[in-house]
Image (cartoon, rainbow, N blue to C red; front, side, top):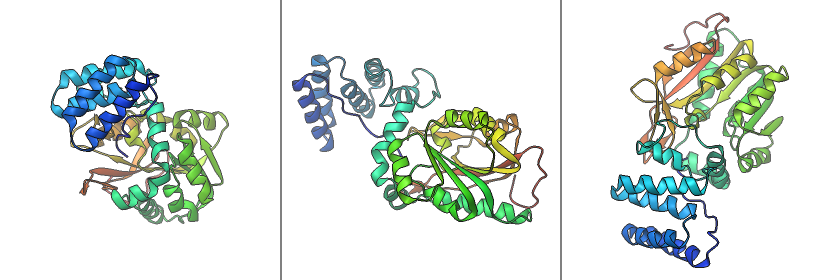
Length: 324
């Protein structure tokens, strides 16, 4: 998913609210200059109107007014410290503030709660999303190459969303657990009846709880999840503590040609291959399979990505399962 757009919370001023709606109507018709003018008047009436500041920032950025956009996004953030619009990410893209800030949880939760009802159709039809199928194929190949049956006692689906990934692995899992930050996404997953346990929680908090309880998994999958995590190194380490001795972590990411972490125009994170290898190594995980794979498209163009399968460093290497 890309930017969810402004979250409307009333300014408390009826005239300002109506002006805001009028501005959105102008923007929808392509009159961005007119919309910006109306929003400028709106924030004069209601200086704490976060949605109006955020929308004004996007319009100023579109027009090439970087300084004006930065000023507006900063006002949006000041008006909404929880950052439900993702103003910090916009500021990062404009070179103001941290280059790779963590994604605000309220922003991610709102993004996916907003899309939950149409998420499956949007991904599979509009974005040609194929992450779960690619991930399952890679895991199955890895298991067969190691002479092991494609069967797992316990599978954890991180960032399970509406259950697209869970559906791909349900047939090979005796027990399937899913966790996601967004309640509306979890509700969609629950309706499919494919999980033995579903939890609404932030991933790091959930993993900490599982570690404290001594939980263990044979397979942890994360399809299109780490694109919303600026630095997943700590998550890798928490997953490593949950894996059985011969367990696997399987995930997809978007990538870029350089090293390190990069915030993309879509407000998603891309991770370089060198960074991923380093972060996995620090977590005592070894890539057993790492290959280029595009799991989705943006504007009909395939997005550069990687599919990765990692194992605990103490586990024996599985021969011939990829260009690790």
